[in-house]
Length: 510
Image 1 (tube, rainbow, N blue to C red):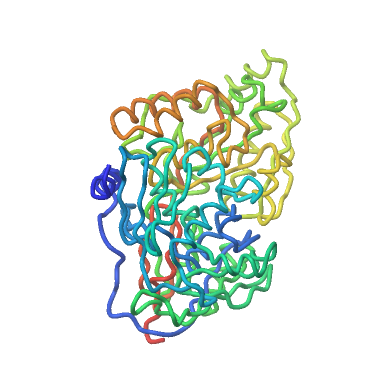
Image 2 (cartoon, rainbow, N blue to C red; image 1 turned 135 degrees about the vertical axis):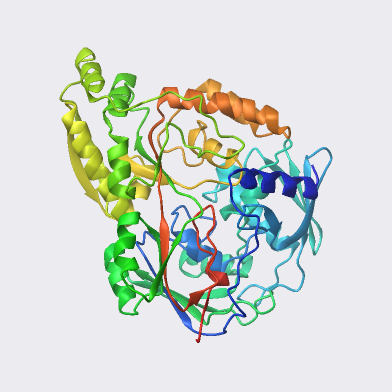
């Protein structure tokens, strides 16, 4: 598969989802200067892209670092630090042709040696990179051909690799900075991106400032971006109404009512919604009991959750893939709301009164979700206790196995392997449920190396059906989300992964 074929394949994938094949929008010639104030419910832990796991960190990482491969708003691939690429040797060798004349923020050169260091460090078993498990078993070796060319030998053909390079695994960090700062590199990130880290006051604000030496002409437009921790979206919108904040994302329909009341604020729909579910430790009691999982599935009033969280604008789903993608399927186990059936399952299995602790993270939508699930599950005969957890701690504790039952949300990736292997393979990078089915593993690793889309589709249909029957997660559906922007904020284009590309933002009249 050559670069043109790869571009066509991914572009067609997202066009099938009804997303526009457009470039990043510009309202008018951008104004240079000004500071953008962003409000978000923060769970920041590190600015080291090799170690990062928190979803919210990516919106900042994408301003400090560039990726080898970039994405258009339709999720088609476009050049990043790799200006072009070729698959050779029947897909077992990927050659990246790099931009030249690019420097890291510390003045050192971005080149093939830097790419090799970034990939080798991610693959190092002693390096503890959060992306190692995504890349090991895929990349056999990385070779410097010349200063501007890298050749990656693969263990077998792996078409989704370019999609990985368009996410965290493709963020290029300075090797010299990593050597200088050692374990403290997460507080001193150095990339090639349009912004540099300015000041980080943990628990309060993080500011990035313009990189005057940025390699893309005319970019960035802003002088700085300040990310402000907010306790809730409601508080954030109130701060936006008095001009303290310029942008807030991930608003529910309910959140938008307050924002829409101000003529100075525009509300823009996101390109898609996050997948919401209840996550449990599938391999540990009592969640390892399929009858308990079935009772929860039938006892959860998902339409009520949709009405309260998303004013009925969300999409209830028995799976984790939205309609319209080439790997979407409707051949899934159905868990329509039936509280009487749920009570009977519990009674027959001797599980009535089972005590469960449901983590309630402090983020607005997740906290409300937990409260609604708490009411539904107690109503069918379970004894569920809500356990408050700070937003900054809940995902890390979930990954560590300290939290065994919690609401969860994920965004889509540009290739099905990016989420399916990530969450559902026994050795998946983010398989914090510890779900394991050898047959599913076999299908996942067969599908990820195929280039024939129809053959992949047949396998992904089987995978998704089996996962729904096993209830690895209790799926709820896809949210309806919005972003709020003050009138002077320009350059916003919704992305399917819901991560705002702040590098393209500007402020009118700055």
